[in-house]
Image (cartoon, rainbow, N blue to C red):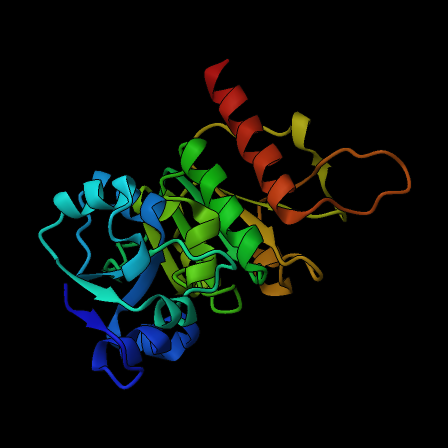
Length: 257
């Protein structure tokens, strides 16, 4: 087994940049999948990595050898100490895949769309994507102020949702919302009605705002439906991930009724 030992190896340099630098991910059109679960989810969705790196000490783990057997991409082995520098996980997964970021789709003008307006926490973005995939969202738009949807942190938090959802990052939300033919709903306090009194059926673009500021003024002005989640007195807001889940599953409930 040939094992990469040097930080100066070109592949190691590339992976180090992909792990930490959004500009490098944008320029190269690549990101890193960290761990067997993400790689398995990608393969199940028909998405093939460009290259796979395996820590020397993990090379004989059954989960990893089973995945390698499914791959057409080349596999390289990396010294354990060097591999640990490429992963943000405290306990190394033993596997990294260099993954081509999908070409963004054409924006939908109807259907069920979720738009994120400045949601900056990677964990929140990933959790929202998981909920969106489960709730049948057809496309997700993320404004430029959102966390990098293809960062390793968001990919891990999404746990495979990226491979099920068409995503448009750095989206010009006002332009896309203006072109959308259905309802444009936002969560807001002023001028809103209870989520449970709103009709969420049919074509819907649901906008969730940032953790601190909520939906931007420009996007709020384009909404033709403002909803609020009823809460106990004294509480101002919910975590955006929880709020997105409540709103999306109210849509699921109404559509199934």
